[in-house]
Image (cartoon, rainbow over all chains, first blue to last red; front, side, top):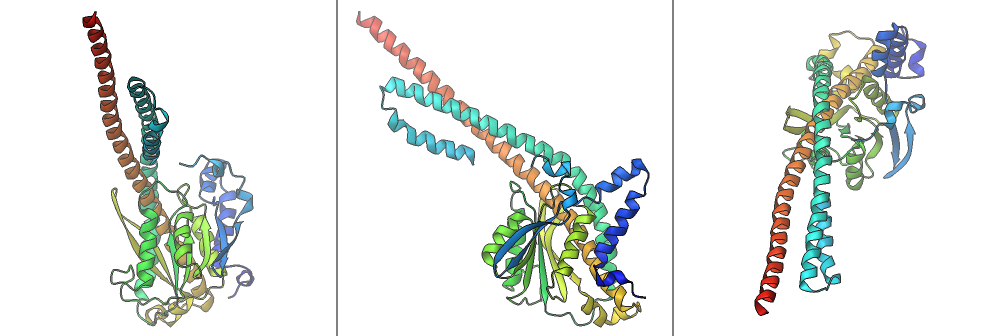
Length: 73
Length: 302
């Protein structure tokens, strides 16, 4: 068995997509708690020949998340 | 740190205040007073940072406990598939965070990476030789700054904005996804992280996660009779699992180290306040005595 998604993205991406689908289908009260676990503000930089490239936000949709602007402690 | 800067300023200033001795005495008193004030403010800040870290610590430790289970479940497969050729191509993944003021957390992992690269006897992965062109990926700005000075050409990917709050599995999956997609070839990933020993101590440790090829070649793993596609999935997913376990552990270490660092800073500030108050009171008393002496000599001269 070989699904078509394998050519497009990795298993982790696949599992994240299915996980968010499950989270969205939960009841309101549980959904809020569960969606917090799916939040990532990850940014990354690709390095080439000792130089860092631009900062890329993994998931731009979550960048406007209020948590991201929380005071740094 | 701030106090030292103030001290330097206090020392350089008196040359400007070449007033009569009495006036200069008053100026020093004023300066001591100012310094006391700033040290008190710093103490307040460090104390509140300690409080915040203390409250976060409980949460981080709970996350670490649950995160560890992912790592343990993950390690079981690798325990079975232990033997077999382990390729020499490694990929180092160094875990730290973006924020400072937490003691030697960041330099601990950086130093461990350097030890591994130098094949030092106390390397975190004993008995494994590391090629000098091994790729390095870093999570967290602090270690990125340190490692980009030492191994600028080995850096392939860096991540940040992790560890602001308790790391989520989405963070780990995102990193694992990018590692797999980056096109860097590896036989196994070595994750260097801070191991939580107790609330006051931590040490750098390494976890090795095998890649798809290494798993396929392992005798023990063949018993599972996995299909090729699923082996690839397993290798990717176990990387995410191992990352999640180590991320939560590093996070707990960082918070506890920050708590301790802030505890020490508050203690030092307290000591400094004590000695400054003493100095201030002594100076004040001396000024009063001087004035009294002046009055009495003036009166007796009449």
